[in-house]
Amino acid sequence: MTTAKFRRRKEARPGEIVEAALALFSEKGFAATRLDEIAARAGVSKGALYLYFATKEELFRAVVTQAVAADLERVGAFARAHQGTFAELLSTVVRLLARTAATGSIGPMAKAVISESRNFPELARHWHDAVVAPMLSLMAAAIARAQAKGEVRPGDPRLYAMQVASPLIMGMLWRETFVPGGAEPFDLGELAEQHVRTLLHGLAERPDGAP
View (cartoon, one colour):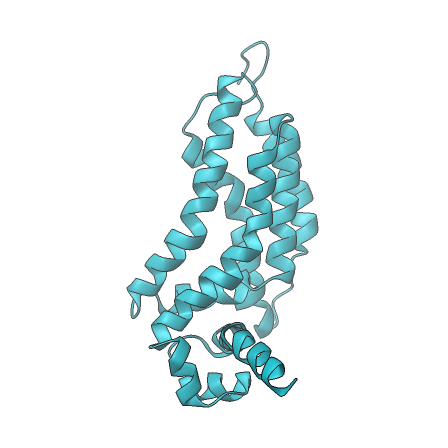
């Protein structure tokens, strides 16, 4: 029994360390977070932490991959499996992204990456490769397919994908950066609903070719 409990504890440790690192990176940023703080939050020794993660940078990459990117995977899974209209896809994706931004770890981590990207460009690169680029490419591909079916007007799919994401990113960063200082918050759910209505009107191809 003791051996089984020890084994379960040992197997859980990487996840516990990642969870602790996520909390501290979100609270303090990357540079200000120390490995001994992460170890203490995870309930392990610093030596035990080094058994799983050799550096703080390696641990940061694990947080991005296992926590943040995983939060977005349900959005990606829906988009890849969707067989309906582009309007249905867009409506659901924007709402899912808003919900993820409001309740998940992406907001605090995005703020940490942006604020420290000049000093730690390799971390920003990993954020781009693991989080930003896959979602942008997924949305751009969906828009290109919709254009081929005549559902979306001509234009650069990648630029359209950026337009889809930008208001949600701004709303998320507003919440993380300005609301703690007293700025009036935006409801990300309401922002998503209005954004969907605006997008569907602006992107939809008109049967008569009108602008």
